[in-house]
Image (cartoon, rainbow, N blue to C red; front, side, top):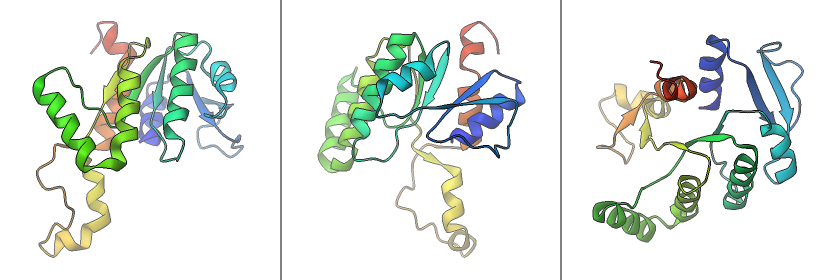
Length: 183
């Protein structure tokens, strides 16, 4: 998803800074994208990377320390006044139905508990976050394209809300513009 957001921002001639673990000298976007070396495990490098950034996309990596990595990112964003655009698992528990859905998800999908805590932490942060919580991407069908052409749909999610990752990337790229009354 990050690559699609990058494409959408490059198309807008936006001033783009990407966080990388190691500088990539052969970047396809050389000259239009500034690479900043930082580590999600090091809050100080994150603060340096986010200094002067209006909004930053955060997609939680699948990592054993994913909650601590997100906590570091949130603290750095709060310290630098950077708005977080988060694409990940989040179930708002503002209503009875939302609280029930959250409880059921935690009970039956224990592997999502950490991801749900990350979404809750970002939602409660002082970053004025924008949260995208897609259920499923149309691009997931590419994995089982042959089965689909043979008349079956082998993925377990049949009645989920689905989105094209490029449409979500377009929304992420528009965050600042939409807030300023643009279209």
